[in-house]
Image (cartoon, helix red, strand yellow):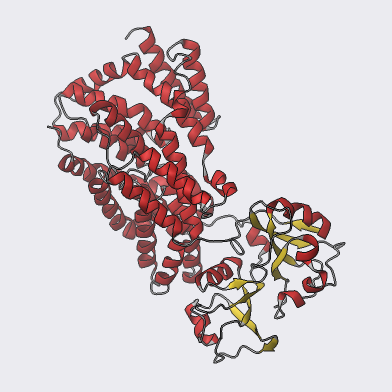
Amino acid sequence: MNAPQLLSVGVLAGMMLLFIWGRFRYDMVAVIALLAALALGIVSPKQAFTGFSDDIVIIVASALVLSGAVQRSGVIERAMLVLQRRVTRIRSQLLLLCASVGFASALVKNIGALAMMMPVAFQMAKRSNTSPAAYLMPMSFASLLGGLITLIGTSPNIIVSRVREEMTGQPFGMFDYAPVGLGLTLMGLVFLRFAYRLLPRDRRAAPTLGEAIDIQDYVTEAEIPAGSPAVDETVAAFRARHDQEVTVTAILRAGIRATPFPDTALRAEDRLILTGAPDSLERVIAGDRLELEGSQRERPEGAEGEVGVIEAVIGTDSPLIGRSAGRLGLHERFGVNLIAVSRQGERLASGLGAIVLQAGDVIVLQGPLELLFERLGELGCLPLAQRALRLGSARKGLLPVAILAAAMAATALGYVPVAVAFFAAAGLTILLGALPVREAYDHIEWPILVMLGALIPVSDSLRTTGASRIIGDWLGQLAATLPPWGAVALILAAAMAVTPFLNNAATVLVMAPIAATFAGQLGYRPEAFLMATAVGAGCDFLTPIGHQCNTLVMGPGGYRFGDYARLGAPLSVLVLVVGTPLILWVWPVF
């Protein structure tokens, strides 16, 4: 090796040591690596920031926005609620959750699919009197496997596709990953259904602030519009269809209060006083197309921003104490709507406008976000610790799913490049109101984008200096006596060994050029080796730090570092044993 090649390898080796040390966050490690490469002259100033304009950055950011829109729509969550009523055994529940997360990860970013399904897992665990730890790690592993099915399932697939395009002029298509990804996902589902018992049964998450506050019984008011599924349904049937998640505490019919007996038939224009947890209320109102109290009111003059909701507690010196929302004229005077109230130790049965508020009541206010925090001070209320509340938020149902499907179809048929299709789809979800602008920016994982933008020119220095060719020669000599399956297994094992210490995208940025050069040195076609790199980088089952999905479930599942290897080590061996022949069957090397 000459000096530039040694420096290139040295920068990447130092970067890996910093990742393993964990003292700095991964995006800062990437920035340090880029600065070092600039200072050493292996990356030119002209090339230093080309990574931030790369298609990969656009595709990953757009995929995260689309994932957030699908998650917000609640379509997958509602479909799962129908299924979970019929599934009661732990192993069957686990298979249902893992399969749902796995196949959803083929359509949206795997961390988004996992986040969508975690609330359902908590509900199932509560009903089964089981620790969520029995579900969460298997779901995380299933999401990693499911992300291998399509181009957009996970970042490594996108990066590997670009490397193939640079080498052969032909990128991997949307569903080129499907044969290998589906095979490994099905194998993983079978394994996880039985092997979850390897996890310790005593794992429990630390109580959260929300659990400590324990706000469960909110009361809200909603009207039944014509055409709602609730029309002509009895109160008992209404509650049964919604799995007893909410209680009808009163019915307001033509301004007259009626007692909600189980056989009372609901009519269009009835106003229901509903009690339940915020998520349950939101599902019932969205599922039956009920009109939440205050939802039809006009915005205050001059307030043009996004409408949102906030949870707050009434202070001891609040002007709300002793007064009802109706008498106070919250909307007329303050430009906000009271959409739910909770009072500790008491079940409220009055309409929202008639509830006399007290100090310590927890309320949910809806209004333009630019006004809400300002109005809280005027109303003497204190915001609670932030948690996601969808009650009172507009939802677009199937719209984001349809936009995502259209983008996938456009790329699969070759009409437009992936980056253009997904950038356009992300823009449409925001323009059509399926995802507010503020939430879109929240869903974008900026550290991932910074890492990608900084590492692209650093990893490319292996190619520009010729270091990747030399490393490929070394690997070629090592595998010279190996059959093709042994060479593919070597790359797959190497990628799986590196990805626990690097971010999976960083693993591909480093490994993919080496794998392609390695294939060339052996006289093989590169596709099998690139596919092995993508599979290995996407399958970190050994640590909670190699992939965000594993990190996401660590706290809620109460897992320890070593728990991952207990379930993940045998799954990693299975991926290596099953994945190698599967890759060679789909992508022959000659």
